[in-house]
Image 1 (tube, rainbow, N blue to C red):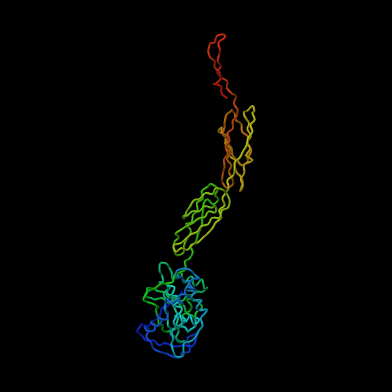
Image 2 (spheres, rainbow, N blue to C red; image 1 turned 180 degrees about the horizontal axis):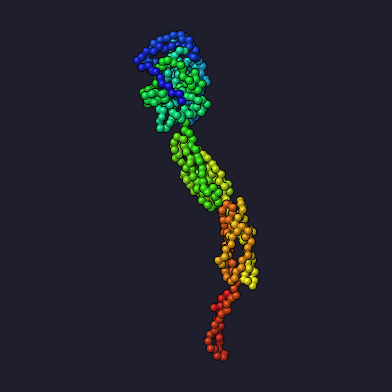
Length: 427
């Protein structure tokens, strides 16, 4: 950023206005003395803020880049006016200032001061402060516009942000501005003789600085609102269906502001808001998680990340019972257990009688029950991502019934009716 200061005239001082016949300001044909104040009054009138034609042209150019007085709108005005400008000198021997609307009617034609007046008028009509510089140097007289960027070193770094954007947009190493040493106000050069906003200054020994409409507070250009950066992290990194996943956006950032809103779309039809949120997927699969962050100026940034959710395995087993001299021999078979998106690495058995077994090889396993009875057998299968599933089956190993009866009366006589009762039998 190339800051320089201006040597200025006071309002009551007289200056020599020169009439040039070329783009460079050379070939002086006449000279007249006028006060700075009188020139300023004429420039203010010629800028003619609020003229329907000028306002309409300003809106047409600015609307290409929606926003509030942003630097892109200033660049749009500058590029259009410079590209479509036709140089036409003043009448011979007269320093002639055209009204901005006249210059538009003429098809954007005039000399350097007419260019500066129209440039100022278009920018003022979108709410930004300008000033017109009459510069005098070895090449003669020249005029150009400057636009107010703000104060250097401000908390929002508006000037620095604008300069960075211009350097990036036009692929340049330096942007020329004037800085007021007393107020730290920075003004951007919009000279028609430059190739880009902030191009080299006209070589001048003296400058007349005319603030346009200086009865109003200065209104600076707004810097581009850099989009916030959305960053997604989550844990666990390999979640399983039914397991809560914690999504975190705390690493998201905004270069010159702060993030005020976080909106999540988990890719399964569920959404949530917050910097850190939890979510459970009901099934396995690949889900595209989207995060949108919004900053304090209303700009949004998005990011997405694929989350691979493990589908848990399914435990399933059967059995057969065979009685032997040692007890009751039961064969268990878990070969119908499955894992659709991986492999089962462990089969854990609990036979319900205090005995357990596990291991990858034990898809089929045998177990002796030494006694008859009812036992709940549990099979837990675990896949290569750590997810598990359990199936439970009640196994009844038959026990002989217990016969028990009573009769009444206890000492019957012949021909007495005896009632036999077997209700206490079990089995």
